[in-house]
Image (cartoon, rainbow, N blue to C red; front, side, top):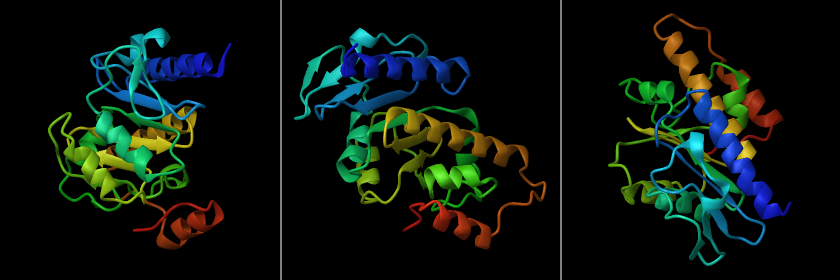
Length: 216
């Protein structure tokens, strides 16, 4: 099987796994990954993560021209913003995962560091997650907001909408966005319960040991 065919199968398998476990429902969410020739494979518009067809993924060449498959997700500007500003981005995933969306609605959430430091793993896989304001679905302004971060964040949370994560490859991006949702779920479960989070010294030790991006 060719590298392109393998990637197509992997995208659909990981998407179905997330759908089957309730991380995004209906026809929500979108996913993309870099191909070995510098192009992109993208989930088509209006499709369900539970029923993606490898042969119908939207295929773009290295110049950003759609060359095969169905019309892509309307969130292409969001994906493009990560690829254009982060040289390490090999895949981008966007979900409508319940607990992270719920946490984004809370008035006291830190917009610069959306996830509380409850476990080491979100820190290690995501760094700081930026909470962006609400945008209409498909609004190109979402992509502009990501570009405004100048490649300094691998993950953002769209308020009242859902998380978006870039990773070195599609598996890494999916693992990281699942960690984001798991941490948001813990935050909602322990809200107002005086949960003992990691302290600043413990967070900094993780950042140093695992070479985590922890900038502005």
